[in-house]
Length: 182
Image 1 (tube, rainbow, N blue to C red):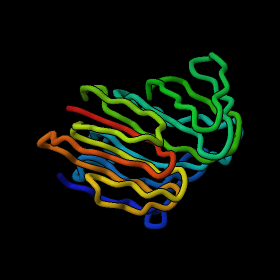
Image 2 (cartoon, one colour):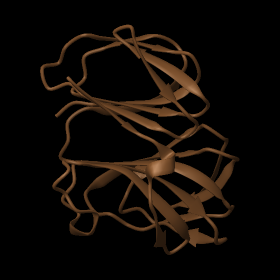
Image 3 (cartoon, rainbow, N blue to C red):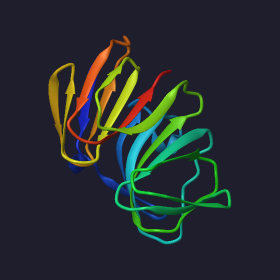
């Protein structure tokens, strides 16, 4: 089992058409964002222009969570409003336009990948997924098999669990919780 912490303070922002984006993790590490050859990518972006068209990524499923406010959005000409911390799912090839400024959490997963799921949780979890992702929404202590990890808001903790060991995860505060199996 490989556990890695990606602190928000260590991310570097780059420009996208609607603001700035900070990549936390791309998997596998040899993948390149511009080559679109990744299994998954986790980032957080600022939406600074209104309206703002999201970048398309053919062949990817996308999860988005607004971290600071609600999000009026249009997906393939259908208007919706998502509240803070509500999970938005769409195909990365969809026509997506946002109508507010804010900060988001973004997880793109290749459609070739098997099972993947994203939830918001603050309870205990017993999990044996191959990839486990924990994104802190607040200052949080996450215990993995009783070993504590201290996260600041918007830090990412990633667990690669190739042997599919059973892992006990305890949260002291609310987190975004993602699992992925190949």
